[in-house]
Image (cartoon, rainbow, N blue to C red; front, top):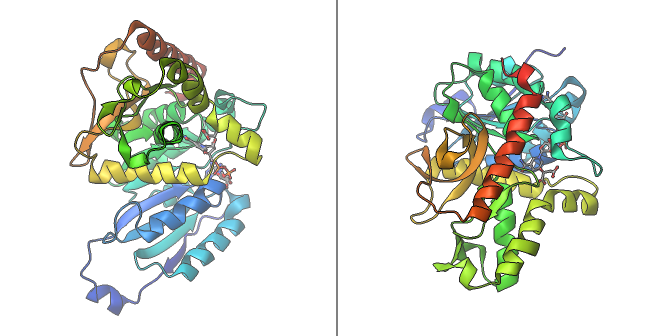
Length: 346
Ligand code: NAD
Ligand code: LMR
């Protein structure tokens, strides 16, 4: 086992002393040599996520067989000479990779192949998140925030959260922003509008085929989406396309989405940092506490608003009985996933 940290300090001590910028943020990325990692790291390093004035310390985790590839990625990061990258540490030990971690991108895990559902990954990927949850619990900073990307991401986030009893539960989230972005992309294609025209496009439930992209509350240039396109398209092709987009990409590319997943992870963390725009929402899978009559204790995707680094689930939305049935069905699937990993939940 390689336990030492490979460190690359990108500035001399004198240069560091002269710097007047904000203190660096410690950002850990797991699966850093993988496909998403390769797209994500360069976005983080360029300032797309934490802003143009926020230096970062990168702490990258991989498994031993991928450490060589990770060294190559680090060479490329160095060769990009990003001014915001304060240092890069690599390790195959989560206890080291999460030392002082303030923002964790938990990507490292196996992707599904064409003949699988995401839930089929739970037995192989679930156990990764017990050890990583414990390591975050023991080594991360007090202001830790976590996004789980590795699938099945909602239930993996639940496992990590249960393994980190000293970290407040609300710091554990999973990624459904990709599903939101996919929904926005479909609406833009249908209405020939821009992504920035679409607001309040919330994803409910599991990052799986049962998710509910809530078109009833979405708006385009302030107008209800439901006034602009047919109910048949929304309940049919739109819903089906968004819910099954991951598989369509695997079938077309022979590999699961990577650049769009990295981009959505950047959106998720950037909005958690900077806040949502007035009158808009973002989708995040977060610990459920019985909102909308749904079960407690899941990592369930809701539309949220963010202010001052704190997210709040959008309250008071009215759902038709058909929509509520979908919200409950995706919750049922998450309950079944939770039951399947009961032995990992301590
Ligand atoms: P990949 O196979 O290209 O890379 C995964 C990397 O994780 C590999 O380098 C592997 O060595 C590493 N890894 C495996 N176990 C690890 C561990 N215990 N600790 C640290 N690193 C570990 O896969 P990818 O395309 O980058 O996808 C990663 C995960 O993200 C998959 O589970 C995939 O299904 C998921 N994903 C989720 C979303 C989403 O919207 N939530 C979108 C796309 C992909
Ligand atoms: C996606 O939605 O693209 C990812 O979750 C990968 C997958 O398995 O679908």
